[in-house]
Every structure is written in C-alpha cells, then in structure tokens.
Image (cartoon, rainbow, N blue to C red; front, side, top):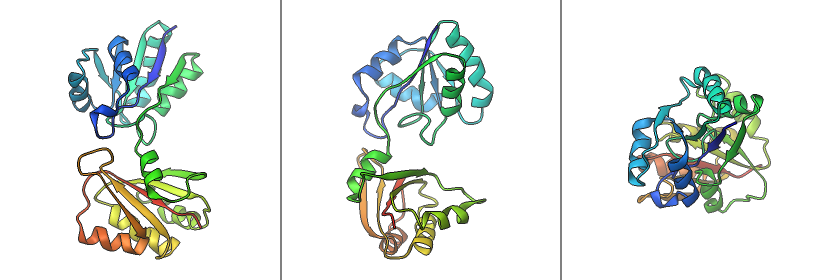
Length: 222
C-alpha cells in the first residue's frame, strides 16, 4: 500500500518551504500539481525532477479514483497546489476523501497557508474564528452575507483583486460600516501589505489604491 502526502508549497517567498517537503517531493513516485507550469518553476528552483501530473478542479472528479488505485498498488504520491496547502480553497478534498475510503494512508505536512499569517497580523481576536474562503460568486451570496452578520467569531475570507472592493462594500452593507477589519495581500512576497481599519475605511483605501495580488480579508465578529 502506498501513501498520499499533501504537501504545502510557499504562498510567496520560496524560503517558506520546509526541508521535509523538499525531501518528500524528491523521493515520491509522482507529484500531482494544480498547474504543472507554475509548479515547474518551484521544482526547478529546488532541483526536484520527479514526474508531475495535472490534478486540478476541472479533472479531479475523474482522476481521484485512478490515483487512489495507483496508491493501493504501492506508489507514493505527493499532492501540491499552486501555493499554500492543498484542499484549502484549492483542489485536494476529493482525492483525500477517495483515498480514505479506499483505505490509503493520507498525511498532510504542516506548512504555508495564507489565512494564518493574515489572521495573526490583523490584531483581531484569533482564539476563535471561522474560515469562509471565497464567498459564493452569485447564487447564495446575499444569504451568506446576512447569516454572517450574526457571526460572533472573527471571520476570514479569500478574495481576488478584481472583486475585493465589491466584497468589502457588501460586507460593510451587511455587517456595518464601522465593523473592524484587516486586509492582507501578497503575503510573504516583496510587496506584502496589511491594511487595518473599519470596513468603510478599507473600501475607501482600496478604491483609491488599485488592488493587486491575492487578498485575505479578516473581519471582526459581532
């Protein structure tokens, strides 16, 4: 019986990868990558020449069963995403579930994920929090926002630069202009930035300053 390793990769600075992650990526039989072109740069940087295969949200339903069978046959396979920990708002959950149902051992290495540093840097309570990932783009979005207006825990969201102002505006409309929040972008990269304030202040800031990079929004609970 083989084993599936879920391996976090850096969200920004390449030095954030662990020594164990590098070793496992070199030793495994196959690396499943969300985008082989993106991951190719990372593997080349660390001298990793293990064979890669695409595993992304558009094919994971089809490939999960096949990969589980290969693992049952004795192969050791590593799963990586473009950045961060696979299955956290990235492909991976379906494969992990399939492996567990097939009796294949799964181990997730500790490592980089974007929301943890954003949550800590926010200065908002982090003893209890809820991770919301990306809000529904259309259907169910307003319903979800209305429910979150009553959430007492600190809330964490992922957002793209193209929708961050819209999302902050909708959060302000549903949770209140004066709700404390924090926005982090480009975590662990050269131009990393964290901006703190009320939701209204953050809307104004990112309206005046063009949003760039990947964003984590942290909002205080009710």
